Image (spheres, rainbow, N blue to C red):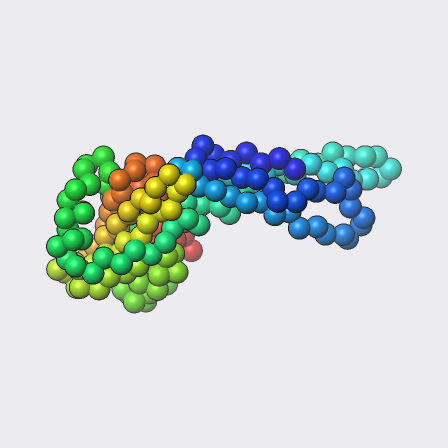
Length: 193
């Protein structure tokens, strides 16, 4: 097995793989991951093995995408003071904010803001009620813990009064890669069925 982590992610196996396995035998392969800097794509694992088919040995090398995303290094951040929140929001320049207008999946549209809040909380994004002057908008905050620093990420989800399934999401972070990665993950969870 070999792992190809993206730039910014370091991965090391904590145990070696045996040279062979008996039929129906399983082994656990543990990889330790360390986020040095934010990254956009998950790591890839190439697993090499051979099987016997009709008396012939066939080499198999599947490429597997590992479920290690920037989200794994996210920690909820409590910002309860509106002045502190908006000061931090304004301090992040145009290159540090990404926006997208999205149509959420039907289940979330039906669940409304409580459903989106539950989704955000499950993603370790701390929803802070009352920070946004519009009660139909959500504001969240979290930090991405890297080996170098903790990066503050702020998310604002603005609802459309005329369409309960349409939202504008803005992700702000003091790192462009972290901003793009987090926006992509959140949008994926909001729109995929």
